[in-house]
Length: 286
Ligand code: MG
Image 1 (cartoon, rainbow, N blue to C red):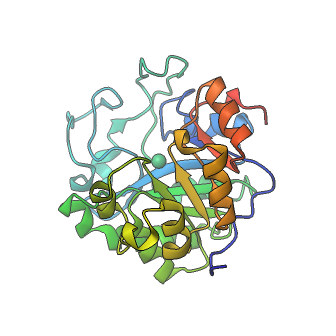
Image 2: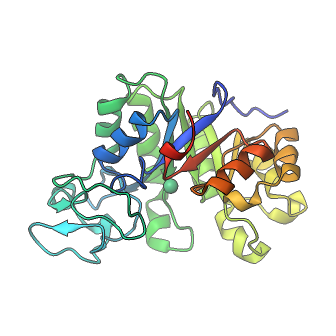
């Protein structure tokens, strides 16, 4: 149908979430190592800009005291996009574990990685590993919108320079990011994240230039026909057999997040998804 590039996964794409967040503090080398040790075929992680224009591997817009140990200045609540990379590097992101992930093993001394460093560390050593690069932009936050284009273009460049352009997704809830990515690198695989069940008014800011009404309110159609996306990435409860079949009929792969419990892992696989993102890759036979 569309000009969407293919997602060349071999069979089933088991992706670790922020590395393997269930097993080690998120976005640390220890977390990425744990995911790889448990046989993932891909890794999903988040990127943002620092105040000095570096692309870093971190999920949250601010630094939080439950995830960060401040060895020098106390940066609790600081905006990542107002800190320099050097300031961010003073923070230990591996020393603390979260009660919500009781199996996490601390990795003291962990420092935030740049996207370039992540690819340098892993891309050549793991030549078949898939990279699902989530570009974090909140389209309802003017400060994040102001740097959307810079972030997206720098991520494209890093994917290109890292030699992983044929094994990466550009992945975002903010479909304006995916539209920018399509304009810059049309052959890079786009993955459209979404939260099921939003009202059209709540969904629309996240859909870039698209109007859900133009697609009959059908999010899968909008992703396929409006974005030339190759992959639809819903919260896992969306993944009924009917919805997955509908996405497949539109030419989309389906990659739900974040699936952690045994019954849910089984249900989404029975529904026919093409992969999944989990905090616990050890719970899925590889
Ligand atoms: Mg993510």
